[in-house]
Image (cartoon, rainbow, N blue to C red; front, side, top):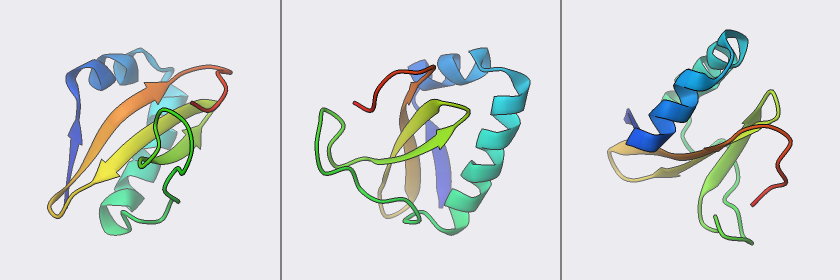
Amino acid sequence: MRLVFCAEVLEVFEELPERSKRKAADVLDLLIRFPRMFAVRRKGILRGYRCFEVDQSLFYYEISSREIRLVAILPGMMNRA
């Protein structure tokens, strides 16, 4: 499995505090080994995507046969989409 960031997501990731980046990197390392460890969202705009939280930011991703694609990062205290 390889990890792919969408261009806009990479910009948001770079703006996160260093501590959040490190925590997210730890989770992303785990995702490469266990891509289905988070549940699939069943409601809302991002239905069908998987989600995890790091320091109150929500990271949404999808899985294909060869890659994990990080599609959105919702920073701050925003409610789940």
